Length: 274
Image (tube, rainbow, N blue to C red):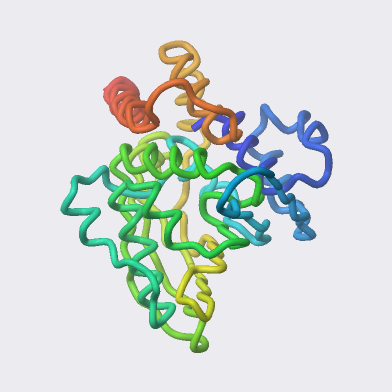
C-alpha cells in the first residue's frame, strides 16, 4: 500500500473537512495516524440519484467508526478480502434472505472469499451502510465489485471466529483477515476485526460496521521501503491501486491488478529480506 492510497481511502471515508486539508499529512505515517484518529464521525450522506432507469439504484449511506491505519493498510495495499475462488466458492455463498444476522455474516464473509462482486452486492438492501468496502457511502457499485475482485486476487481470506446475536436483527462477530500483501508490506501477521452487522425484515444486510481489534505491530520502516520500491519498480501498478481506492475507474480487470500486487509484494519481500 502507499500513503497516497491510504489517504484516498481516508478521504472517501470522511468527506468532511475538504480533502485538501489532509495534504500536509501525505508524507508522514505518524501524521496520517493523527489525522485518522481525529477524523469526524459526523458523516454526511451523499445520495446519487439517476433518472430514466427502470429499477431504483442502490444508495449507500456513510458509516462512522471504521478501522484506523492498519485496517486501511490491509484494505488499501491491494485492498483485502478474500481468496480468488472458482465456481465452487461462489456456489457455497449462502443466498438471502437471511433468517438471522449470524447467517448474513457468514454469507458476507463467503462472498468476499469467493471474490464475486455481484454476489457481494446482492446481500445488501437499498440505502445500506457498508463500512468495509464503501466507508463514505459514495463509491459506485462497479467500484465495489472491483474492490471485491481485486482484494480476492491478493489471496486474502476472511474467517469467522465467533459470532453472537445482540438482537433478532443484529450480530456482533470476531472476524480474522489474512492479507498476504499487507503482511509483506507492513510486516504484520494479519488482523482481527469486530464486525457488527444488521439485517432488515426482508433478510438483507442494512449495515456493516468494522473496527480493528488487533492489527499486530507494523514496521514503519518496512512500509516506507515498500512504498519507495513500488515507486521505482511498479509505478503503473501503484497508480492503479490508488485509482481503485479513490473511486476512479480502472482500465483493466481488477483481478489482474490484485494478482500483480501480490506478485510484486512477494518480489519486494525476497529482495528486502535477501
